[in-house]
Length: 145
Image (tube, rainbow, N blue to C red; front, side):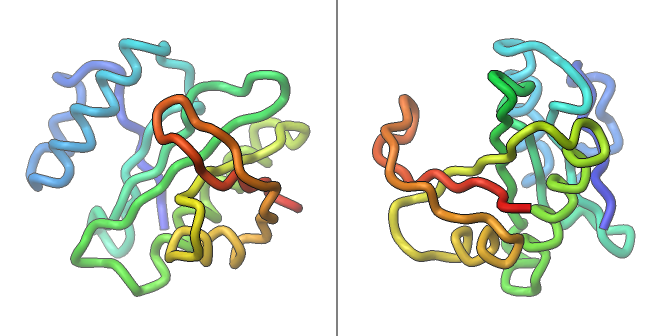
């Protein structure tokens, strides 16, 4: 598994324009960068496995107060193959290599689902329910190391 960085400007990402899923996520990422800034490594990524783009990964901005939130997804054709678990693991490794003092968090729907299983497999623990300004009531998780 390899995380391929998404560049700040749409025109600098031509290698990602061959699949509809790529274009959708790419546009969202570039718009997000315009809103919050482009601060590598705290950016969005495509996940590549066996020379295929299989999903996406992101930090929801750079660390604030010593904490960073991760997000990840697997493209539909590659779901239920353990890829989401690998993508999550790669994000954790990137944080650890960049600054091991940063706390890693994630948010999910407030119910058991694929994403909660991915987090559990990656040694995240459920902290509780929080109100997310964009998503409403969600569960917040933190990597337990």
